[in-house]
Image (cartoon, rainbow, N blue to C red; front, top):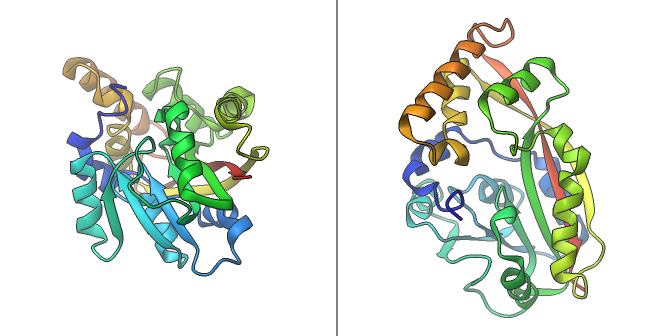
Amino acid sequence: MRHGSSFGAAAAAYAEHRPGYAEAAVQWALEPVRDRQPVRVADIGAGTGKLTATLAGLGAEVTAVEPDPQMLAELRRAMPAVRSVPGSAEEIPLPDASLDAVLAGQAMHWFDMDRALPEIVRVLRPGGVFAGLWNVDDDRVGWVARLAEISKRKSSVTLTRWRDGEAQSRQERLLGAGSDRFAAVEVGEFGHGQARTADSLLATIGTHSHLLVMEEAERARLLARTGEFLRSQPETAHGGFTLPMVTVVLRTQRR
């Protein structure tokens, strides 16, 4: 879990540089419970509140749950009106059957599913939604694919890797831990993008977990190499551009 616990020291950078989620993806995640008003949602592993902000903007009654105190402090600074509590997927500090949905943005792959799913079942009402969302780089675009090769390890998920098996493996992990309490898992993909410059994209890459746990010299070399690439490409060398991404979603419902 070293990666999962590596974000706190970079909380401010994470808040500044990480992208939010495609609104259409969040709407799709909540679609099975959209008629419940208000829709009561927990954002588990909320970090600095990227998904929380989208949920609040859609009118959900959202509670942000985050284990890292530095991340939670950033979230509270940015969104003082949103309810936020310390906690985790394995220990959700909310009452039984109190939620219509539990969502996790860029976090579900860190959960101990054997412990987390009973907790999620406990806090969800029957028919409630459990969904994981991830932003992945759209490596159907040539320079994005080359950037992924240069800046990230092979374990990093791009759209191609998602379609080639990552979605299936995460779906199987979810079903394997809770198939008796959840319906079949559905998969969604939604186009997304983030306004960037070469410098701001480099700063975003610097918040990725595999860089945060690197030795400083190795991290500096990788970022220098990545910066050289971005400043050599016509799409990214001059001024602003949009980083092509896709928000991918796994969605299931409590039986």
